[in-house]
Image 1 (cartoon, one colour):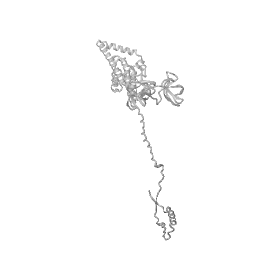
Image 2 (spheres, rainbow, N blue to C red):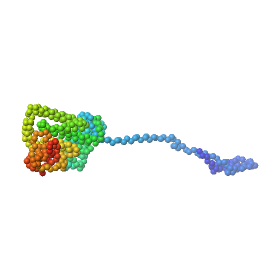
Image 3 (cartoon, helix red, strand yellow):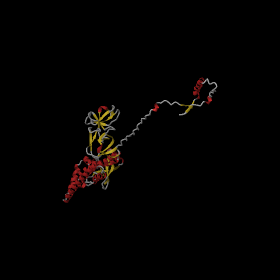
Image 4 (cartoon, rainbow, N blue to C red):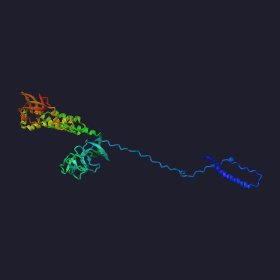
Length: 419
């Protein structure tokens, strides 16, 4: 603490003291009284008064602010393609075991998983799913009203799976189950639910689209093989050609092993075809050894040709054309059969000649008719669009698209039209 000297403070006190001393010692006249000079007075140290205790003398208590909790940022759900790993796995309308079952999924079915809710995954509706909306809210394909309920079935008791809003446009048909309802595809954002334990991830959501395309290609090969089998089974052994059918079945078996169910169907079809072909071959060889084959088989084939009316003969080629279309559609984004024939027309050409029937009982015959020019065969032809029987013996100009001639001597064509 600093020291401070105050002369002004002590001077009056000293003067008072000298006066008192003068009165007390006044008898001593001879004594010399010398008053001290003010300048000689020693400064007196006056300590500074201690400051009064304030509240600061009380110990301060500091309340420690708790450290902020770490911010947990939820990672957004990443959609993926899920494969079903169980049999009869239930797809539900909501994420609980009491909700309505939409359908049962089979092992290896593919779904797109978009989210999760508890023990369930939220998934996109499977292809072909149907939903229903009350007809009173639809006018010329436009929704009239807000938050119009979309239900799982055409009934007011059915679960609500989504909503439509005013001015939304829909494509639908009147339900065959209840004509008071429209049947539509589930609205965008509709989700169904499946238990997590039955789903395994096999990649991003784009994987399903890729595998769906592959599956469709395999199914088309199977369909084509089945259609061609129907055609060949109507022929005699000598006319049968199963090489192309076998190729389709083997393509599925060897190239589409990621679809075991389709591979099993292809194996079954292939084995059935081989069995039927072998039985016919045995019967043919037995008859041949007895010398009956040539005359009887040719007569039978001729009878079949005569019995077939022109429309039936055209129908025999429908499976062949269907198989060609399916192969083309696989390479052209599943476009329609009308687009297939439009494409055929763009690559077509015209031929002119006289049409004659071609009824010889030969194997792998590339057409039912021949076009001749100056009595020389020009091409084999057939059609499912034009009744060529109507033009037999006439000279015509035909618009045609090329077809396989099965190693015969002349080109083969499909007749698109007569010009």
